[in-house]
Length: 257
Image (cartoon, rainbow, N blue to C red; front, side):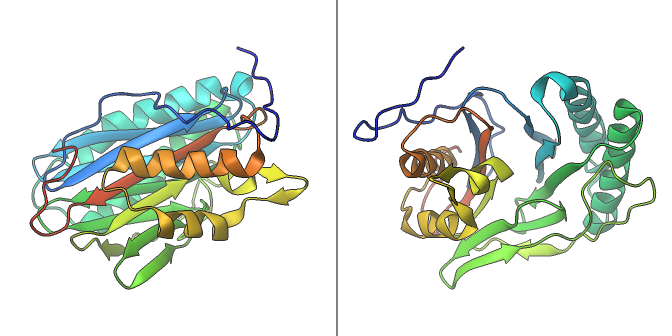
């Protein structure tokens, strides 16, 4: 599909989801969206590991879509299989499990690439009972956690996947209090440019601060719409991907529940 640029006075088309079904999350809502023609290696994935845990991730495999399809497929398969297995047991150390999960994904990407292939990734496990997110940020754009105190960056806790066979990753835990939300965006969003000026992480933060939507889908759409308005054009050179997790405020019912 060929995408044509819009004139500056015309409003770019709104972002639409590429996947309709997401796991139901107790007291929260989760969704991911991609806008634009597939150009790179963006991959987001969700799965329910047990009654209290949902595992999610946003990965960005370096290279064009044509050359990294096999690597993306391997990463997705490993994510699905190991995410379901490793996080299923009730009594686990989530941090240790997340670090092991990263190592296995790292090896899977290296095998599929038959060598080195950089893959920035943000991987998380949302504990519905505790309202916490155990995460690993492998060289990815910082996650943005919004709550009444403001917006907090969740920076890299290790190098991108796919680079070294013996990489190590830290897996801290962040609390997602009622009414808080987590936003992840791909590098394509941050690097989207208009007249050589990038959208940047600060504009993502500003867009998140202004967002009043209570659904994950609405929040992801608002961010992607904001990028397109900034560019005055439909995306043509990179994937635009956003993933959001919104915890319902006290007394509210989650939109996706």
